[in-house]
Length: 233
Image (cartoon, rainbow, N blue to C red; front, side, top):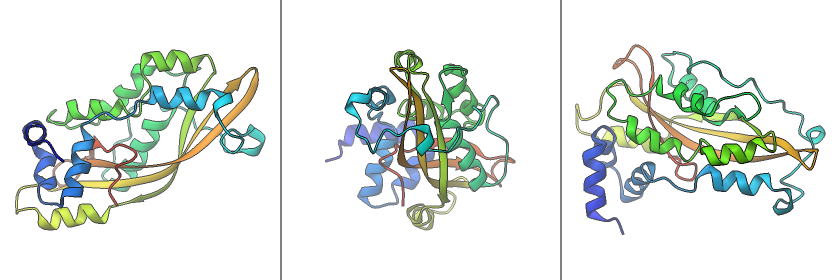
């Protein structure tokens, strides 16, 4: 059951997106609330996937059986674009692409903040969202021991039907024109070493990116991210 006090707090802090969520059914409200509630951190996730004894044979493969090579780690902010699809793809790849051997942890967040909400209203929430994707300092130190690197193979980018329904139900003028969402589906790849041997693992991920594009802004800007288990469909 949704706590009314928590709901009121969320609405007051995130007016831009909460207006839309209020127009949807309860299940969508639940998804909206989960956007601001940090779930399992990547620290928990990487610990499990980095420890070979806890992984099954189907989860850990040799690079020879997994020929996909990691792309270069982004060293610049997300490219400017007016295309929601292209922007969502770039954001997704930036969120999931890092290499403990040659990248800097603070840079991962900084690259996304450069293209964040120009008003700053959604930025505190975005920082909370990123906690479910970006390693903590402790986790990064742990992963460095295994020369861990991660990247995303995007397989699909779509505007979720749930979002279109939300826009149709929202009152005129309630949502900034150009505000939209894209659900990204892809394969998260992670590779590293264990006891001197190369290991790798892959898993499917799906999450929703909320953004504001034209005509509100000349370029798309990142508002929020859903958790990987609460993507809009």
